[in-house]
Image: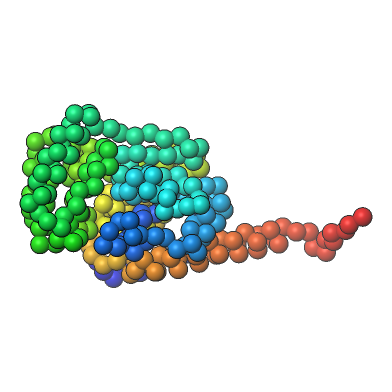
Length: 268
């Protein structure tokens, strides 16, 4: 869709919320360890989750361990490594794995190859690998060629380009599948999905949300399958805070309308 997309409306009842992290809830930094989500935004996410029976999940290329650390002190349902690992509202986790010998071989192969591309960095996620080149953008094509060759040699793997990163992961794993899995279970079941993301890795998620007649929101510029757009991470922060307050105000108004006219609380 074109860059003329407008900002999403504030929502209230019967929605399920999904948020990417880097580039969506947090500003992208030169190194992943430098990223953080403001406390005020985390509080608003928790408020939004509580008012929707817990139907709010983080969907990210990061591991679930990293997501939990970034979301402290709160604990949300999660899909890490693009859905290769997932935790539901009850804390039950499941994950897709690769054969240990393949993981070991790929790790050695990638480590050796990246020695010739100074400034690039290998992130091993157990069931996937991310090659970061934010500090060495001149090696973008070399990194892509390397990842493509590994995927050609290993049909059980697929390639996922992102912002200054190329990921190698199990085939069939993507954020759209993770969102779909959540939408088939409580408390997400029966609700309208809302998904915020910023990268190529989020387009599968937008596609699934659109099929479910939900609200898909692209953060930043660029072609997208999303139906709405916010310009920056700061805009996402403002939307989350306003959305949580908006739903809270609507719920308070509904409670007040239900009170009998002229009712009086008495203490004895």
